[in-house]
Amino acid sequence: MREHTYTKFSPELGDAVDLQSLLDGLADFLLQSGFAGGPQYHPYWGETGEEGDRSLSALKQAILDALLKSGQFTPEMLEALRGEGDDLSEQKLSDLLDSIVKRLIEEGHLTLDNPPEMPAGHQSVMGPGGLAQAAARDVQFSLTDKGIDFLGYKALRGILSSIGKSSFGSHDTPHLATGIESDAWSRPYEFGDVLNLDVNETLRNAMLRTGSLDIPIDLDYSDLMVRQSEYRSSCATVLMLDCSHSMILYGEDRFTPAKKVALALTHLIRTQFAGDTIKVILFHDSAEEIPIGALAGAQVGPYHTNTAEGLKLARRLLLAQKKDMRQIVMITDGKPSALTMPDGRIYKNAMGLDAYVLQQTLSEVTECRRAGIAVNTFMLARDRALVEFVKMVSSITRGRAYFTNTMTLGQFILMDFLKRKTRKVS
Image 1 (cartoon, rainbow, N blue to C red):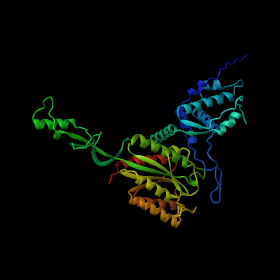
Image 2: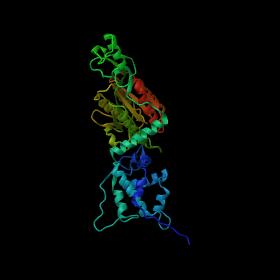
Image 3: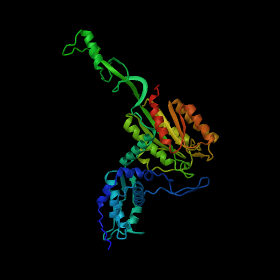
Image 4: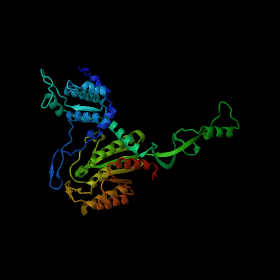
């Protein structure tokens, strides 16, 4: 007679899941873009997609998919989850997913809005139409700052790993100053310098002045020599993300990779470039600044591309920053097709490169040049007219233009940012 040994399910099985690997596998789901406002119809764009699902039930399904894809379902977990028919028990599987969600919340990666409260005297009912399943659909989850920071770190590590080793530090310039790293010859100490003493040269000066090296050492102000290091500049960056509908139409999601790059760049600046700042602007029919914490939930829409309004807002934000360098990093895939009129109305031309829109957009580009702001454009399309427009923007601001795709976007942006370490500060 064939024998079976059944093990009792234990919530501790959820503790065996590597949350960091799980979050890495959930990155695309947590940062999904979708269309703001749900399904819509537009005479030019046609039928748009559905709004991103941020429900607890969708999160559990994404966790299950990530566990299966990553192979984190160990033989012990599968054995514990099997029912009498050697199939995965729905109740046990639900308990496991609940325990994983609980860990994500307890460790500060996620928060839940309006958690379900079962009425007194009622128990959870599983299966289609059950109370527990209905409650899971009603509860919405959101990423915490810790969760966003972790996704930024993972995105940064993934991008840089494909580039190779890179030396991190502050932005280097040809100017010299006293600091921690010694990259040049020593010079006499002047009031206000960092007291990064060159001990050998200081003692040598004292010995030459006194003719001996007695203890205690007779040091004079004129003996002090400090080591020089390269002057490190600070940089203010505004990341402009195009969220017009073309960024997610035609079978390719370009906006989610752009959000990942924004999180990676934010993590890089905060951890490696002390004193630098980064702000994020979404531009569509109009433009607005959003906090980094809101970036994960940002969605595509409205329809058009108001590049001029985005540049105007970016320039205003940068001029408020007291930094040596100011730059705009613009990610887009379309031609300017909207413009904010003096009375606040939005002028639109979906075909793009309208003569009036183009003129006003290039005027904003010229204002950026006058303010000493470089505009580096990362283009996700290769339309001939679009290429000519980007060339004009780059020539006016002496910025750079990159024609890339979603796979190499992060590499281009981070390498461009790191290369600016050698830029001379005027």
